[in-house]
Image (cartoon, rainbow, N blue to C red; front, side):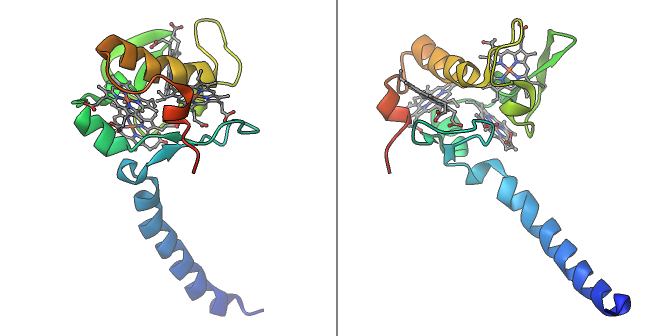
Length: 129
Ligand code: HEC
Ligand code: HEC
Ligand code: HEC
Ligand code: HEC
């Protein structure tokens, strides 16, 4: 193996990765939620067209869902957009921090109840393909 011959290929691979990654992870591509943190999914993925949902619901503040806590205290008006819920919420609850499934359910359904809009029944979010 000639290292000098491999290097240009590596550069191409890295360039492709850098160009591709940001778009692959951008929120406008999100159409459903299926977190890898759940070892096993017992329900179909939850329908959630990120940008379309938020536009329809009139949600402009990212911190409404992507909240930021520091030392257990909510940091007002600041967000954690880009950090997955599962990065902070473990599967099991930890003190005042709900476990991952409850975190999703409480946030999604909580607002739907509050606003009397949006789905509340299991099958309306966990839609079978
Ligand atoms: C407002 C939308 C919404 C409703 C209504 C809802 N869920 Fe969920 N649920 C979610 C989201 C979002 C997740 C996280 C998605 C994921 O990663 O699978 C989730 C995750 C889950 C999970 C863990 C992941 C899995 O597939 O095992 C279970 C179990 C679950 N929901 C069951 C239910 C049941 C039962 C009901 C009805 C009582 C329900 N959900 C109603 C949005 C909803
Ligand atoms: C209604 C709640 C809600 C609002 C409002 C919202 N998001 Fe999200 N966003 C989510 C959920 C839920 C996910 C999936 C996170 C997960 O499953 O870990 C997500 C994912 C993302 C992701 C992908 C990275 C990740 O966390 O997995 C980005 C980037 C993002 N949102 C940015 C934004 C920005 C910027 C705003 C404000 C303009 C915003 N979001 C507003 C709920 C919301
Ligand atoms: C930066 C870490 C972090 C991220 C990212 C995060 N959370 Fe939280 N969340 C926390 C902490 C810490 C608490 C506990 C606050 C307390 O002890 O009162 C909490 C509390 C909650 C609560 C209960 C309080 C409330 O606001 O109703 C819900 C529901 C919740 N999170 C849902 C979510 C969802 C859904 C996501 C992803 C869109 C998410 N969280 C992302 C750290 C985070
Ligand atoms: C802060 C409030 C709020 C939060 C948080 C929220 N929603 Fe909604 N959602 C709404 C409102 C308002 C509507 C109704 C929009 C309309 O039709 O006018 C809605 C509608 C929906 C719909 C119907 C189709 C659509 O896109 O309009 C789905 C599916 C949905 N929400 C899923 C979710 C899921 C899954 C979560 C959690 C990850 C979530 N929502 C979190 C406010 C919220």
